[in-house]
Length: 361
Image 1 (tube, one colour):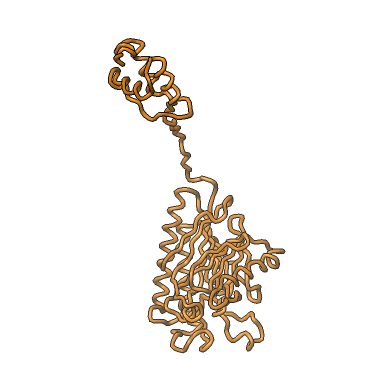
Image 2 (image 1 turned 30 degrees about the vertical axis):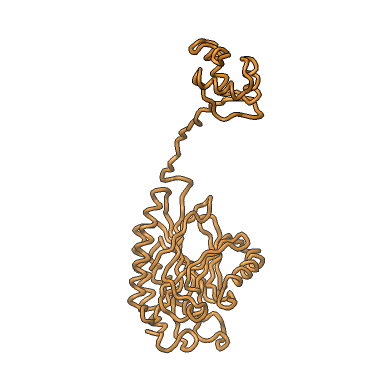
């Protein structure tokens, strides 16, 4: 018998239903249909469906019932993104650490005139960053912690070689540092309604070897801070709260509700020129000693002339850069060159340090 007579006529309702079912039928369904329509085997039935009704199958499913599921594309919901205005999450404070000016150091690429140019560059960068952040939140205060070694000192063989001293310590302070930083801060009053200045001593401020002096209170950095305080005394919007003569070698300062421990960093011992293990060890001990009576959240230090940021036992520690370049200290002690740069930060009352930049000098 002709196989064509087994199937319904093309175009009929029965044929259309058969074709629709045939296209998604399992192997078991095909075997059953072949028997119902009188075919000897399934292959003959499939061939007849293709020739007589033009039905073409896709993948034959062996074990599961056919299920065609059509899923619509996921709906995209546009949620308005809140764009913070000037108030945002509250006022912020501009925190600008200054360290390792080494005024009076003489190298192939650094001297007093280079220091002046780099200080001017720092001021311009600070102003640009402040104006940028003011588009998000109000900024009314600048806090500047001096982290030591503003003065190069004048101890030949201890603080440098003979050829690395351009001028004496007294000239460094009264002819350069005091007039330059007085001009620096007074001009910044155009941008900041209030300025607070803190400061701690550095090892280059030591007047003699510590073993050779009667008291550790003799330090050129402290002399600079006291002279700067007198120079700025008539400006009521500038407060100088630096380390006092005979005071501790550290300060814990409050910036917008957060506490910063400021130190120079020369007391941290390096191992094979690498200071990070010493920083971790010292940070843990300071938390358990200084932090008992004067709790702190962050640490700021200088001394190493290379900017870096570390997380240590839940405390963020920033190592500031320097003003000098091509000095021998970091190269001989750590195998690294000076990186003339200074961190610049913004402190939010809710989030702590909300932004930090490295200003390249």
